[in-house]
Length: 275
Image (cartoon, rainbow, N blue to C red; front, side, top):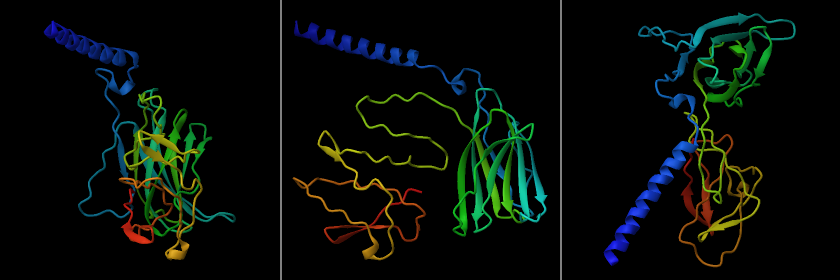
């Protein structure tokens, strides 16, 4: 009798597991890039450097990138001279409506680039505003561009345009994400050059299975190189924890001098930066 009960329980568990898998897969719609026989559009890497090397080769771009041209714009009485890289694109299919645009450039003060999307009638679809922060270092920045009606993207940069180095373009898609109802949820936009999603400060402390999550400061804090310019927090605990995880975001960090953490006045070392 005992053997029968055990066998019946194993069979019931196996049947329940199979049914759960079928219910999950049948209940979610199929995205365009997972349909059988559907060819996904490839991404595009555009080398926009103006100095050609002896070993340079002709660039290859996917069919949805129609043309790339450099247009110098002369200075006027109210504006300085600038260079415009014009990239003509077309949607591979109507399913793709948002374009991921990553621009690589030298972030020099007064020469920050700007992205402008146009439609066929010459109307602005989107203007990103100046990219970068003028830190005088090689940098990159991303913009999500709605391409419904847009046919070209301009990279406007003051001067001769030699601060622009390259651009990476890829079409965005969406998918359904299944997550536990009572678990913390974070907004995630996966992209090739981002390792972590932005943090969201919780208004209230939370405890899940003995783990306490608390926000020490929801607002941005100015910190400096001296210990007097650091951010200090003091709070009591009922018992010594096995481990403590501290996460925070740093705007305009110096990778050669990461922030250091002090606990009870003791230096426990620099933090690990995820760029």
